Amino acid sequence: MLTQLFTSKTRIKLLLKLFLNPGVSCYLRELAKEFALSPNALKEELDSLSAAGYLEREQNGRSAYFRANTKHPFFPEIHSIVKKTLGIDKLMDDVIASLGKVEAVYLLDDYALGKDTGLIDLLVVGDVDRARLDELAGITERKIKRKVRVMPITPSDFEANRVMFLKRPNWKVL
Image 1 (spheres, one colour):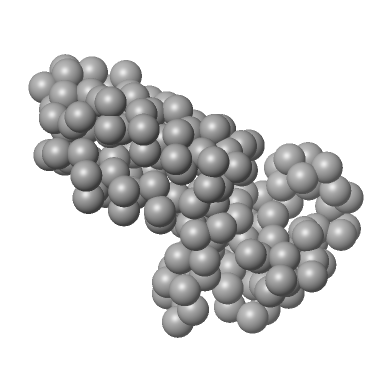
Image 2 (image 1 turned 120 degrees about the horizontal axis):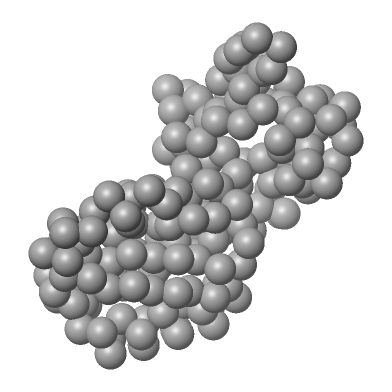
């Protein structure tokens, strides 16, 4: 979907990384290493997106950190497009609509960090139908061509182990 809108693969990677989880802040060399690009090529894209107001830039010593500008008028739309590209919106709609009582849903690990690794780890807190959850994960996997690993947990078990779960990179999506 994004390849039809943007011709720059680097720009697509940046949008996926920074707009999937807007709490993520990254510096140039970290992104260059992750994307296997030269810092100069990446700097040009970061500067362009920052100049247009899509990214916020914060200087910390010698490093410049970049993150999505959540105050930009187009932020909600770009954020939505990124979630649709990764299939997260569809998965969330299905989870909420047909599983029972869902109290919270967390993306864990790579996707919480904005990394599209092909494996989506999802923690579902509530009293849910495990068979239906597994069925939805399989359907979603085929649609979005990514592996979905779900972990349902009761609210009481989540509270008892909250610190352990939330030590992992996480992003609460519901």
